[in-house]
Image (cartoon, rainbow, N blue to C red):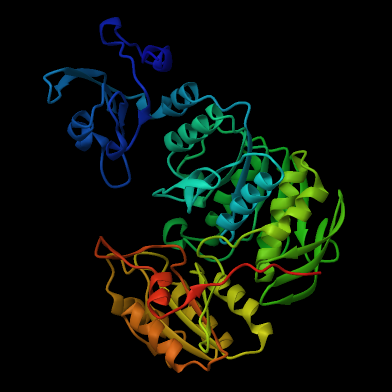
Length: 492
């Protein structure tokens, strides 16, 4: 493909520099031979600072954002001249150029947003679609690609250049369905600009990311845009909180709106019949029929997540009965309510819960077993400080014993993070060494207790002062002799 096919008529491309190229790339670290590097202003630096690196990696041309039209050449290691075009319109036109390069017009796209549950819903969608014979793509926190072969990603919602390229590559592989996690950052930073979604889902909205959005109203406004600005034909909104209720009554949403939850007036309603360590049995009433769900998953929130996944696929034309039957074979999402066991030792549960609401949901999901409940949790550095005391309060209220430990301190002083959290619950145990905290919690717990290890979930690193060192909660449990429990399955 020629560069002129993408950038004209918005930007003139001299014929002598009209290069053949492979992909448009905005992060120099991702440049491969034959790509075009887009150098634009970022939140911390300008892409101009990385042009030399992009050229070294094999860029055949550079389009740079600047105040005035300019042209110059860089030379790569082989002595080949690489054109660098600077123009004011680069950033303004980039969305149009990306959509020209990566055609995804015939794909069915499901967008999932919310404070908690995005990864679970997207992966349940992919699992269910695959189970009934339809390949499905996923873009989100746990990786991008055609399920189950996902490649790691830096962001929940990557840059638009990555999102469109990933979807285009799925399409070329014959995949015409994908589920995407769409974060509030992704919406406010235009990472899904110009895209058309068929279905949008809101799982919930609770306090998080106020370090970025400032207020809950701005946070809500970012999420709301998914339902008003992206051409959706169906909206599935969890009706369990005030923000879900506000969306359900939002006259600016022109799509068909489906409320889901356990309220008597929920358009899609689930009712728990029973639950155990093996899973949940629930009745599901929908506009497409009724069914009994037998889920090998733990927690009411997982029932809500599966309800959203089944509903979104059904409205796209999948068979409702086949989906509800397939739900009995779902696997827990990596790092979400994962059970680990060892004979004669407390059961351990790893979960990604890193907000007050998520931590509350997980602890409440474990309470019905009526066993001693122990909680190990941490709070991330360089993130919303106001949620730290709330998390500590939640842990103290719902668990019998609590250990506060390090999560990802990032560039923040771990002791400051502890001080913020302890303002909400000053009497809980503290241990900065996360592995030591887990060992202490398990050692102090009764043999039939449940030990929740919250905050990091699937992560395989710990970020301290910008350095990521290898670490995972699952590896700690493995060293202690634990093994991951098999799904087993629920039984009606």
